Length: 152
Image 1 (cartoon, rainbow, N blue to C red):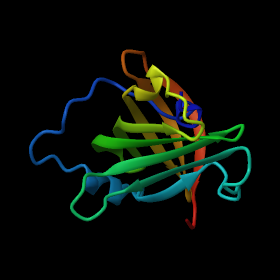
Image 2 (cartoon, rainbow, N blue to C red):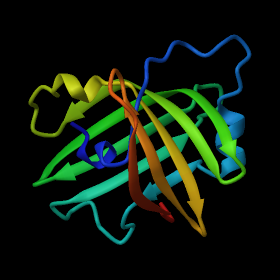
Image 3 (cartoon, rainbow, N blue to C red):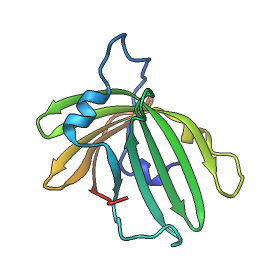
């Protein structure tokens, strides 16, 4: 599946957010909006490339776009963020629901590419770390995957 986010992400069963639920607010307050990567110096032309961009286009729902390139095959996943909540001053939990999954080689994405997940990020200086991941229907796992903010 999304090996990049598989290493760092998680999920539970999520429903649509409750009427009036503020998903964007906690994400902005935490400082998650923007582009993040384990290594921002990697270029798209390299055989391995990882990026996740959190954005809320004007008038649209908050999304996470994940670019995961392995062995020259780019998998692009666009996830709707179904929930967000500050767990502590330095932690945020978010729920992700895949909307589209495309592969640059034209092959069909695996069923697991469509799993919901729930992640908990923790601030570590200027970086963020995924500390807990839960994929839909599976127990939560502890994780340690660091991301730095990319200049874009």
